[in-house]
Image (tube, rainbow, N blue to C red; front, side, top):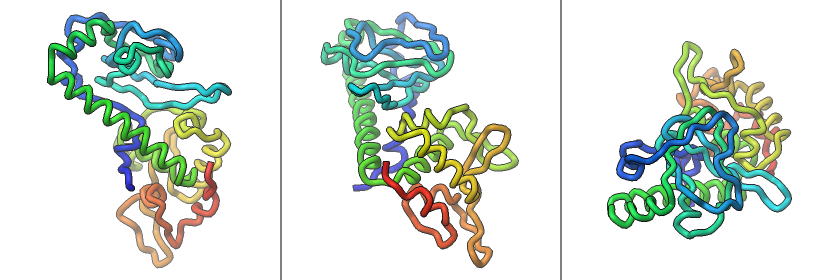
Length: 252
């Protein structure tokens, strides 16, 4: 079974117009950076749609280990599971940057779903997208080496936040090695070693505290690939000049 990068990407974004019938006339909540919206175990009072900013949805194990489930971007709906099932939230939601979200009470949410069949179809697509993402990442974690998973995540970030520069594509947002580790349920040390290996091999380029995929590296005969090496690495393909493969080929 194969999953595309889009299936596994932890960034959720929707055309805000799709949920216009849901958010119409609903109040907004303004969140400062790193401000919690709700905690795991809280009873639900509303579902949320991101108007501006970025919200991280995270769950914690009984031992306190953090697992980031997805990043809700503009137009993304979250918190709906607890409202639909009338159970406590199984995750926490915290703003990553200053953000504004629509807060739709559970009563209004369920009422508008009942009155609008099209909203039900949109909700089903959203839930299917989330399921595909979580299943894809679960399969990846169980069968893919850490270096490959990290490469996949960086491709997702480049697709979502990449900007074209004179030096190529750069990821425009700031993130830490711990952020990537939390997304992949691995250790910060593993991520740091992978970044170092990929940078040394030219798979990643670093400049002014930003990173981006390196170009297709020249092979033994001076041949240059049309695709960046990071794509080959994320797909698990071996290259004759891909020495980094041997440095990060451990499961975690």
